[in-house]
Image 1: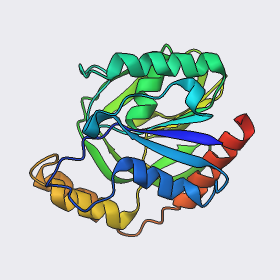
Image 2: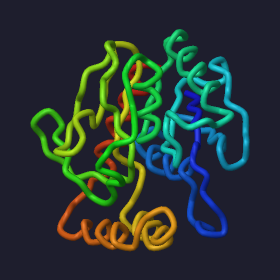
Image 3: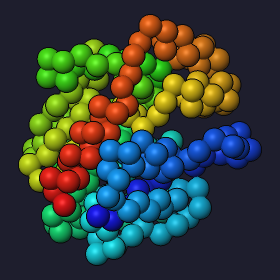
Length: 229
């Protein structure tokens, strides 16, 4: 099983020097639960690597990004085309944060900038009656689900927290691939750059007294790819 991981983050240097990039984080998160897969990270935003063709992978993961679906990036329209081609080929797609948003926006829903601004740190999501704490870092949200999808998770501030589609696709607004030490370091470095000092401090404080099980979502993602492989 070949899984292409699209890394759409800029990972600005030297600010984030020494920190693993989003593609590596996703692979590290999923490898233990999906050891039979062969992963390939494609650094689209930071290194201008070209998008893969659907014939070159069996599954696709779309990472988060500093950009929104409304931004003009040279890879934005080709990414939308790739999502449609991958859907047509019947191959599984899994989206995280921006990946969740661009999938919804491409498949007939709507994603846009939220008036509440950045939401960062640990937040509680409701997974159809089961409450779990998750890590978040986003400003945009899916505001209308696509007609071929149904909502599988919500939060008090986020009505479309996760989606499952009528074809092989699923997505989450949160970041299951991140760990607390990694996010803590990113928030510290991003303070005054990507985040206000107040938001960064509040995000770090939100980690207190929460338990986040990244393996739970890795297991679910692994089952998703196995089911559709």
